[in-house]
Amino acid sequence: MTLSLAYVFLHVAQRPGVPQRELETLTGLLRPNLSRIVQTLGEGRKREGKRADGLKLVKVVPSQSDFRANDVYLTERGEKILKNIKEI
Image (cartoon, rainbow, N blue to C red):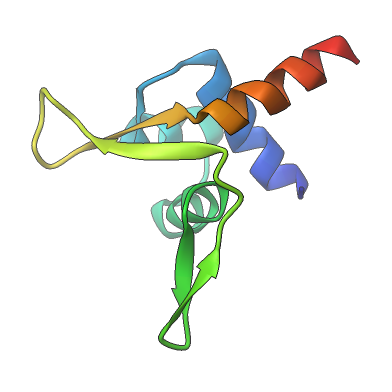
């Protein structure tokens, strides 16, 4: 896992359900970079018309309060990774 992936992962772990736009502010990353990182941490992203597998550590859920926004949560797999990190 790269440092930027770990950085975003830990921000999501600290604030479950954080809006993706708020993650931009918290991390200081630009929207395209953050979007790519969240996709990589999640289900993956399209490359050359094919979907590259993601790490499945986070999930993106449409916000219930703003139909234009997405909230980011850790998946069960992400929670397990976080638990292992805390044990170190």
